[in-house]
View (cartoon, rainbow, N blue to C red):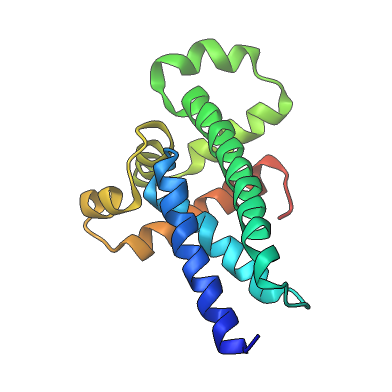
Length: 161
């Protein structure tokens, strides 16, 4: 198979994967993130899979990646609800373990604007575009900000990534 044909096949499958994920209820932003991760992973592979094997492989990677992202977002949403919703703070802080205290301390050090962005994304389930419109900035800026916020939270929580 020609390399140009292989790239076209990957592109077609990526579009198909995006549509498939959206049809299964995945929001547009997450579907695009999953498909991008799948596409990059396939392109970084050292070997070229035959056309009859690439589609199932890409679907399997997409399914696994979506599950990983869904679990991460669900966990982050749970943590944010625990520490960023004011009426829950007093009850939950007294029961928090040492790691939770570190996390709360990290979240409390964030600016109110950063806390609002996290709330909009993970609690209110706003899309990147909706957040960008409310913050009067670009979607790329919001994506970068969320990336940096997640990184800061992981660092404050003790994760070295």
